[in-house]
Length: 318
Image 1 (tube, rainbow, N blue to C red):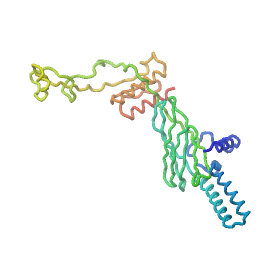
Image 2: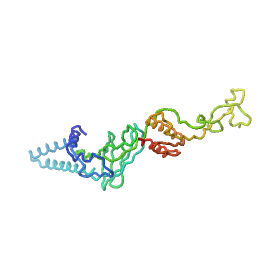
Image 3: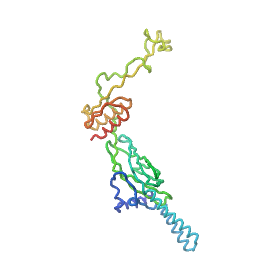
Image 4: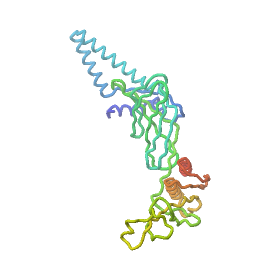
């Protein structure tokens, strides 16, 4: 949008109460109607209007009926484009908002679920904090639009205002409206970069045990009873005795019972970051975990659903 048009729009929003009426958060669903849709000419529209005025003066001055008819036809098209631009927003309805998961500092993606309200809405634009999406909302059924919101901290974050606009069909008019859903998204805490592993009972130092498996661990001397298929013939040829391939098999995953009370030396945010790192490491290798928090106790489990449950519980901590 040209800077001049942007300044006019900002001035209008400051001076006219009707334009600022819908800046407060609203509960879903949110429907656009004639009282919340606003239109201004674009830079191209202003230039086109001046051209029509010049054509009108010239055709009247020279009594040129053909030129006057062309001017009237172009003026009618201009007026019709204003009505079409208004209709491209009118009736659009936001029914729901669906979010994905994101860690603090990353962009959080969420979906806006629109309904057309009986007619199509072509060439629509949605803008949020510099992120934009172009979509066409069908008259029947749902249309999902994905936007991304920057995040800086964990916890619940309210959605800012979202601008919906269109220059359809000729680019002569800019029609826009603001929606401000009363909706918050949950942002997960950022795990710490590095640190010690959790304290485990028993022999936590043992990571592997050697026995018949699939991965070669080392070569050892031949012992009576070793199968011949495990003999490393090429390596044995360079020595004076037989060598046998030995294998390692990972031990079964130990359970990580993560407890808020075990991190008394850290401040609350550092505790959350460390627990988030342990959960991420356990999720990466499929290790079962449980989590005790002052506000919630989550039993033993593993997998994406369990991981999301634990991270969301950390994000909700005060």
